[in-house]
Length: 504
Image (cartoon, rainbow, N blue to C red):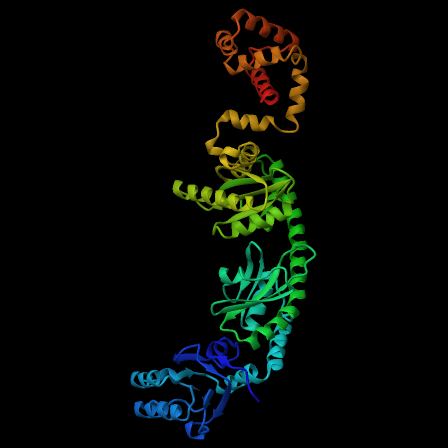
């Protein structure tokens, strides 16, 4: 039988190669068959293109090592593998290198012999091996997709990844090189990609909740036989991956719904205490002790909160900081927590990380992000989340800041304006000032300017380019119509906010 020509890289990539390690030579050395004997005298006289496997360990005597290297080469073998080859002396290594003889150390020669047979003459057996390994992975209980990928990678012996056109979403058992991922064809059901010595097989994941996903099995130096076998393994594993993704999605939606309700109950306390809410927060892993930096991500158009949460949560996981996030209304609310008050440079680093997360998220979602200030304890957590919500509302109209704002960079008037933009305040403001919105809003505009200039008639007249008597008359008429005492500080503040809400 004429066997397929293989490289040592393919054999080194085999997950059951008996613990094979290169001592002398190159992974590009080719072979087509393997011969196994107890020691060198048992080898055939002609070993051209063959791999010699010896079951007797290498002698520790340098002269015997030198003689073995020469005799194996004289028989025509380009490769020899045997136990304890790591103790090959410097002199014997030089001889092997000069003769062009590849030397490999192997812990289990019989396992290596089987691996050679699978690669060179039994493609179906290799496929069956991979498929059996995939099936064994399903016997283990995985908590999530990442756990299932780890089981598969450990059993199959190669790296696995779930990818989409934007990049790697999950991986286990190795790192999928970006150059190799970019060579994957997303329009094909089954695809083989190569980049240098790296190669991968991928199959489309038929998921009811996600589109454009692929399952990838990858490694170094894989032969054509291995890639064919891994293609079959990928197709067998794909339905389980798709099912796991669906299970995780359902669990994520349920968890988001529960955590969203818990956050709403916490914020409704307005910094107060409720033992039941505190107990639920502890069960959920939410810590109120320490210091917190809140953030709020909202859609500037239609956004799926669950998809947004998934993207934000993945980004938070890469920050290396204790963090929490959940859906809230049409956006996502979250916070970073610190056991002690972080120094200013650490706070700035955290804000920069949130800004980078915002930038990355904007590539997939039309969003605005607000960040609160560093606050302490349970009341502080409620405060920083409220600040973040206000900052996010303002950020939604601030293209100049990249739709990202930090509350520490805002003035008090901007925060008050954000509050007056709420769904409950605007109708109340319209009802209060409706009687002033006649005659081209002259009374309303004058009153607003008057309050902006701290109730100063002269300053208001200058700002509006009017005579001060005109301003005084209008203010007097507005006071009569509204029936409000303009000298009362609380009434004046309410009027000021209402004017801002209607005229902004």
